[in-house]
Image (cartoon, rainbow, N blue to C red; front, side):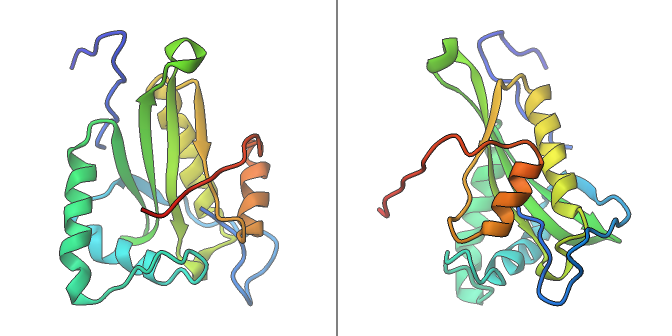
Length: 181
């Protein structure tokens, strides 16, 4: 595929990672997770990761009545060449996810920028460097796409996640705001 110089390169379709209660505070290395683009058959496992998140407060649920909403969102993400939803797998099981979005902006001379969203690792596997593998992969994909920066937001109550992101080189450089619509 040929991409014009002024167009973002589409992402190839090919979190937080802190100890859960009762888990060791010293990171335990696991076999490297397989990181790949999410597929429709991953949707149930992805929703389960978000529904199990007690801090997120997004109201995610595994109820059958919500499945159509998640499918519409998944299909929209999958159809957008500027974004990719990824999963991390261990032994064939989805254990983490993140979304990477690449967009142009006018500041910084029209720089291409990347946004890391919805980083989530199975709570029972936090502290095992799965989140680190995912974030490092996202950094590599953003660089490969030509982005000049990678930004993320993290809920203010996720102090362990904030330490995790700082350890990986992220700086707390901006104050974020949002409004419910």
